Every structure is written in C-alpha cells, then in structure tokens.
Amino acid sequence: MTKLEQDLMAMLEPAVDALGFELLGLEFVTAGRHSTLRVYIDNEDGINVENCAEVSHQVSAILDVEDPITNEYTLEVSSPGVDRPLFKPAHFEQAVGEEVRLRTKLPQDGRRNFKGDLVAINGDMITLKIDGAEHMLMLSNVERANIIAKF
Image (cartoon, rainbow, N blue to C red; front, side, top):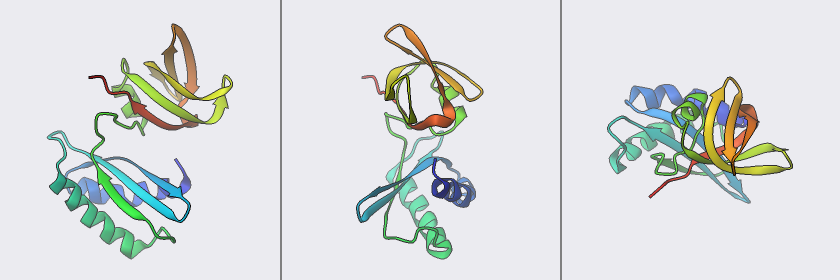
C-alpha cells in the first residue's frame, strides 16, 4: 500500500465505520492523466447500490474538504465482489483454504505473479501451495491479492 493509500485509509475509515460499514481497503490507480480511487466496503448484510451511494457521498465530502489528491480522479465505491481483494492480515486469515492470485512488489523466486491455495499466514509470512510445492511470501511484499472465485 502506498503512502497516499495509507493516508486515505486513515482519513476515510472512521467515517465509513460511522455509517455502519467496514472499509476493507482502497486502491489509487493512475493510468496516464486518468486516476481512479476505488474504495471497497462490506457489511455483514451485504452491500447494495444505495450503500455505495451513501458511502460515496460521505467520502466525496471528506475528500473535497481535505483535498489529499492533487490531480483529477474518479471515485468508485464498491462491494468486494466474488473476487474479493485481500488488504489486511485479517483478510488473509479469513481466506486460508481459498485459491488466491497475488502480485508482489518485488520479485520472489524469479517472479511477481503467484496463483495457488492460501495454506497459512504466520505473522508477516503467508504460505501458498502452488503445483504441490509450498512458497512462503512476505505479506509486506504483496502489492495486490484477490480470492479466485469458484463457480
């Protein structure tokens, strides 16, 4: 998570919590002159369009006042969906036994992209089983991780 993303989490989490939702995480993606701030929320009762609109309105007001992003961007508020992103250690703990896809910040074992079963999380280490072999990765080196949906 970048410094900006960490600052945005700290800024937005109390407001999202006050609305009765969990701020799972966020992503700030820059593609040329177009940037997108994706905010993922969840609730034990699920998320609907009205929930996303309510959180979007609150988050937008905070961002307008605090102005932490200097360039133009689009705000998206979303449920985690079936390919749930994993942001926090607790998310990885809940996903033990699931198949995941992740990308590391720095190469490990000669690659940055991994796909396998999440076997364990121990402190800052996660264990993936890929093609019968276990790979240990540092959680702090994970750039992006998602559960792979099974249908």
